[in-house]
Length: 136
Image (cartoon, rainbow, N blue to C red):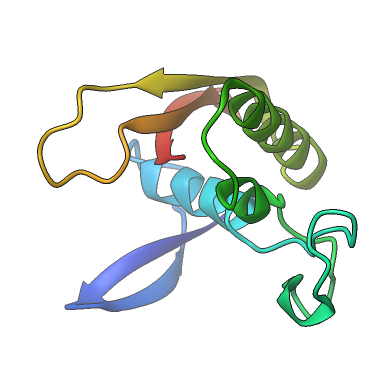
């Protein structure tokens, strides 16, 4: 599995994950963030402007579509849709992940923090457990 590593100030590179290495958080986080934050093309019923529907030119259905959930107010319905999209995207596009559990977590918001709502994803990959938190 590939992982994203920081090589300098705002400089990143890809590296192979060493299965013998106990710290596999970087590789799993790279996989999860790549699946979740790749822009899937929004349906025309959701975004009318065809130039604003995003999507990767190579595969318009790659990714999760989580970005167009971000464009609406953070209501309980939006939270449920975000959790459903995350679960579906990870199951379809990252089948090596097992025992997935996705939930919304709220934290106290210190001054200057834009969002105190996170998606928490837990599961396992090749028997190694992980827990990743991403802002919603």
